Structures are given as C-alpha cells and as structure tokens.
Length: 127
Image (cartoon, rainbow, N blue to C red):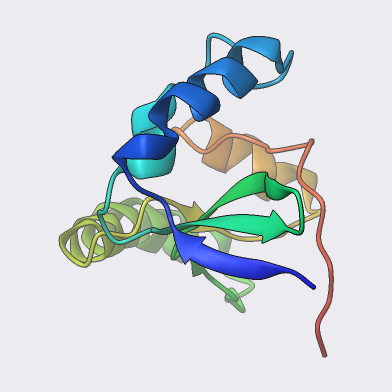
C-alpha cells in the first residue's frame, strides 16, 4: 500500500542522486525544485521498501477561450489581456498559462508573443 509524506531536507541527497541518473531531469532542475514550499505541493510516495518517487503538484491556470471572429479586435485584445492575466496569475503564484489550439494562425500569433508549445506533456482525464 502506498503512503504519502511531505518532502523534507533529509530527502535532498536522494533527490539529487535520482536527478543525476535521470536523462530528462539532469541539468534541468535540482533538489530545491522538489523541496521548495511555494504554491506547489511536494510530497514523497512510499511503498513497503521506502521512497519510490517524488511529486511536485503545481497550480496551473488553464484558459478556455472563445474568440470573436473579428481577428483585428481579437489580436488587440490578446495583446492587452495577456500581460494583465499574467500579472494577476503571477501575484497568485501561478507559474504558467495553458491553453489548447489547433488553429495555426492563432498559434503563430501567440508564439510571436512568447507562448511556446509543450509537446512532451501527457494528460490523464479524471472525469
């Protein structure tokens, strides 16, 4: 049976060792990422033999937006809205704004404004 416990400073050496052995995380993060206590929640998952993995659960702001067909007004509004919502979300300690789109002109427009794709994410639908 799995158990959960908050991460603590005693986990630092094990986390650092596991990061060093992980081709995805090596050079991209350090133990502080898994131990800091900002808005994210960090915890260890243990089985009968001990710690099996560490988890960092973050609050992300997923946006669902229905745009007007008027592209000029929409573009102007996006340019004003993005820094406004980013500032507000940052004050609430969100780390990312996320949205989905397959509309190539919108994707190109947003990439010019600092948005980037995240192709290696995987989603598990709970509902």
